[in-house]
Amino acid sequence: MDTTVADPLIGALLDERYRIRGRVARGGMATVYHAVDERLERTIAIKIIHPTHAGKRQFTDRFEREAKMIARLTHPNIVAVYDEGSHDGLPYLVMEYVKGRTLRDVLNDRVRLAADEALGIMASVLAALAAAHRAGLVHRDVKPENVLLSDDGQVKVADFGLARAVEASGEENTASGQLLATVAYVAPELVSEGYADPRADVYSAGIMLYELLTGHVPYEGAQAVDVAWQHVERDVPAPSRTVPEISAGLDELVARATRRDPGARPTDAGALLAELSAAREDLGAPRPAVARHHPVPPPTAPPLANTAFTALIPMARRVARRPPFAVIAAVVVIGLLVALGGWWFGAGRYTETPALINLVQADAQARAAKAGFSLKAVEGFSETAPVGTVVAQRPKATESILRGGTIVVTVSKGPERHTVPADIIGMDADEAMKALAGQTFKVTRSQGYSATVAAGKVTAVDPPAGAVLPAGASVGVVVSKGPPPITVPSVVGKKVEDAKRELEKLGLVVRTTVVNNDQVAKDKVVGQDPVSGTGVEANATVTLSVSAGPPVVAVPDVGGMTFDEAKKTLESVGLVAVKAFNWPGGRNTVYTQSPGANQQVMKGSTVSLWLY
Image 1: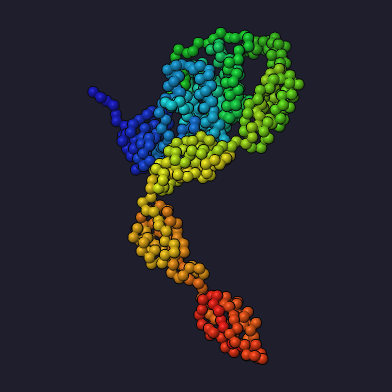
Image 2: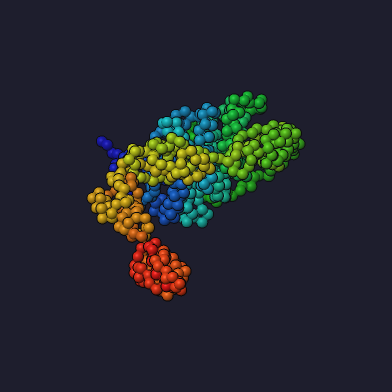
């Protein structure tokens, strides 16, 4: 007997547009469904928030704000958000449908990944996080479950901002506050202080890289809060303790990303991506001979990241337990014994990093070599620094560095610029949007009729194809709606009544406006809007500009004036004065005129004057 309870949302139509076809997955905050946008006829995913969160006003307000911010993110490695709404009081997001598996599914099948494969996936994840960090958005829940691997090989990150929305709804219910996190990946400052900036995402990404390389997360515990506090109290072990063949460079990369002090980590995902890129280049280099611990076998029980260990963790600090006196004494003795050796293995081996920023690469190379360091250069964009100059360095100036170590510098390759593709016209609209978004453009989409371009294809782009633009520039795409139902004919030069008759016969509405025109006869059309050839729908309005003919003026009375005075007066109103007769020996005074005073004549007409 089948006891399965049918999901009432399957088959439902949301906002008279989104038809739910089936359930994809259910998580701690929401359920994801496979759906169809019946208006645009495309496959989508819909994430509907569970009623336990949806009933909180503070959550729904935060959810709406976060959704609008996420929707502005356009990056090929970020799951796009198309829309947000509410159905029966449950908030939902309309998202890009990614056909494939989560990174968690891959780890469940394979346990761990090869180093080059792990770094490739993490490079895409960090590129997505870097785009979010540039937009002022912190993910706060980076983990394999939120990384999607499409069937065509794309890596996409999902669920930006949802953890913050849930936290907001909990803050009103507890005096000390709560944080929502997957404890296997939570940054120490989120546990101890409750704040997050891009460096919290860097930490979580470091933990995820550790898991990809080793097959398990670094910390375990029976309670979520116990696991969370291990991030605060312990350093993440080197991945090579579990997998000896992991290189020293990868050990260092994981260590830098997972420093307990946020200030010791890369500043954001973009900085960590630069370090990861350098590590990928060095992946084939032999590992120096160093003392190793015995490998730690992977856990036999399922890793914490595989369980539903996402929880609201109280942010109250632990109460310190006073250790016994004997333990204190032993620690003091051990400290005295290792003090001398500790100086060398601690501060003695380190020195201060020289300042290299703003130097050209050759000068930076020379300064580093003079101080006994190697230099590794990677390229990066800069809007202000000249090409070839150092814009960043790792470690930073005056920070500690191992004597004889390597300084990694980022050398400016000039401003980041991208070209609007020349083949964008005629491209499928969705493909064009992805192509432009992949070049960091902010793309807007509109529609218009076209007699030459098929429906759904791009008819125009602004700025035009070939334009060179900075990163994040706005680009408008016009998509064809197919041939226009009505093509507006040209009626310029026709009599207004004939023009109206022709346009109204096509099903268009005609509006007229009268204008003065010295060159066109009265009641003839001198202009139209829209212009001829424009595609419009039935009942569209066409405005005709109709000539009022040359302007008419009243003839001034110039009787009794001298000829010069009369001429000046007539010319002031646009008329021409001529002498018709001048009595010999007379006083050169007007005694009659034609046309007579106050008659209406066209501007530019001639007035004949008789003088005596």
